[in-house]
Every structure is written in C-alpha cells, then in structure tokens.
Length: 440
Image (tube, rainbow, N blue to C red; front, side):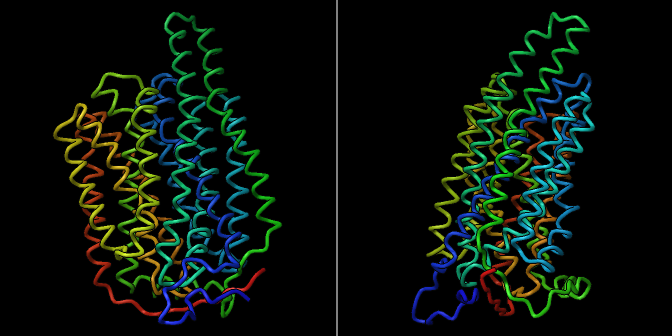
C-alpha cells in the first residue's frame, strides 16, 4: 500500500512532493500532459491556415475549429469524471488517450472529403479524448502525494505540457505552415482544376502530423495499460452526481476557481491563436516567420517559467504567485493594445511567461478540500475550458470588425478576473479532506 495522499507525514518534516513508489506512474501521467500540449499548439495556427485552404472562409468561421475543440472539452468532461468515479483514474486516462488517437485518424477521411465541416468533427472527437484525459490526469496527479504539495506537484507535471507545446508548434511550422505557404504561391496562377488538386495537397500536408501522432498514441496507450498504477480508494463507486454538484456549488472557492479557469483558458487560446495575426499585422512578416520567431520563443518561455513557478511555490504561497502573474498579464496586454509595433510584439511574447502557472495553479487551488468530490469537481474545472471555445471566436469577430490590437482587450479582461480569484483564494476557508491510494 502506498502512502495516504493527504499525508501521515511527521508534522516537523516538510511534506514530500511525491512518494517514491509513485514516481513511475507520475512520469507516465506527465507524458500525457506533453501529448495534449502537442495537440493544442498544432491546432492554434490552423485557424489562419484553413482560411487559405477553403475559399471564402472568414476568420470567425475558421475559428470554429477552436469552438469545436474546446467545446468538446465542455461536453466530455462530465462523462470523463463519471468514468473516473466508477472505474478509476487509470481507465479514464486510457479512454481519453484512445479517443484522442481516433480523432487523429479521422483527419484522413476528412481530407478525402475536402470539406471544412468533417475537420470540425475530427477536432471534436480528438478534443473529446483530451477532455476525458485531462479530467482524469489532473486530479490523479493531485492525489499522488500530500495535499500540502498538491498544487506544486501539478505544476511540475504540467511543466511537460509546454514541452509538447513547443514540439507541436515546431511540427506545425515546419510540416504544415511553411509547406502551405509554398503551395499558396503556386495557387495565384493556377486554373480551377489545378486549384482542386492543390487543395488536396494542402489537406494532405495538414493531416500527416496528426496521423503520425495517432500511431504514437497507440504505443503510449499500451505502455500505460500494462503499468501498475495507484488507485484512489473510494467509500463507494456510485456517482452521487446531484449531491456532489450541490456541495460543489456551495463551495465559493471552487465556484470562483471554475470561473477563473474559464477566463484563463479563453486568454491562453486567444493570445496564442492570434499571435500569427498580430505579429504579421504589426511587423509585416509572414505567419510562419511569426510562428518561428515569436510564438515559439513564447512557448519556450512558457515552459521555463512553469518550472520556475514550481520551485518558487516551495517558498511562496501559490495564490500569491498567481496574483503577481495575473497583474503582470494585465499590464503586458495593455502594452499590446496601446503601444503595438515591436514593443507590443515583445509584450505579447512576455504574456506567455505570465500564463505559465495559471492553469495548474487555479486547478490546484480550486480542488483544495474536495476529498471524494474531487473527481466530479475536476470535471467542472475541465469544463471551464469552454472559455477557449467562447472567447476565441469573440476575439476573431473583433478582428473582423475592428483591429487585431483592439481584439486583445478580450485577454486583458480575462487576466483581471484571474487576479481577483487569486486574491479571493488567499482568504478562502476550506474544509480538510483525505484520500487513500492502493496499487492496481
């Protein structure tokens, strides 16, 4: 039997970040964070790419990719939590990974149809798998050690997400955007018949990385399936959904965390999706150059600062770190809107440093004291990813009717809400709850 997650450690000793027996499961779970980082950041630049592939597609219409992607997070989070409650986190992780792989493979029939809507379906299935995966993996990591270090532990696991983000961005820049730009130069003088052929070639370029990732995910699925993982002991496996939701809605810290998570995800996806709009608009460079010279460094900074935040949280309370970063996000976004140009572009890169710790920190702070309600509670915090589906098209609409610079008022408001939650979380009174794990 492994150590109780909420800890029986000596009060004189500093709580462990992770029990020794759970290191391998932690590594495998952390790898999942990298895989959904790849999916998220390959998807963001495709909003612009699809406007070039499908004639007449507006920015708002193309941003429906993000609506399908993050709408799936909203739709599949509760089923993911029910799977966790009835069958355990490990099986939930396996279901999520499997659905993610199926979504990747659906890109192939979508490319044969050469229509935009089938791609939306593929994105929905893929992201539905990610929703189930995140609904299980995030609270699973929280449970692998003492509650005192849960938020710090989740930040460490989430540090592998930016690694995947960098890989996903590189794949998109090298294998998709750069090759699409080369083809688009040939389309200027092409006949109608040649245009149809070139469109098929463009779609083949888009789907290839997804098919490769799908094949790799099958191998990862098998590896996790054969590995012994901790199992959270429940008083029973019944869902008790209505009673649990009623308790959660009476928990102001949890409710505010869900709201803050909604605005955080909206901010992150909006900032990254429209980087390839803002940078070319302000500096007069191509989308692939913007991705390589600005978005990629932003993701690297995002990853570095998440590791830094994990270390800082051993000395400074997580809510205080979150508060400082959220206020910094408001300031930098203001520079993006008001100043623009090279300074605005650098400020846009800096925003990623501010965002680095936000998702896991909000998730960890919102999950405090939930006990056996953590599985259903985790689904609410994942459903909040709906913010990416709602706020990203909103920013796209502002671009269509106004300017790219003004559109960044959307993430500015988001960071203000997150700062308010950080202040609230520092004063919230929480119940104490413990869980116990065994190996399955």
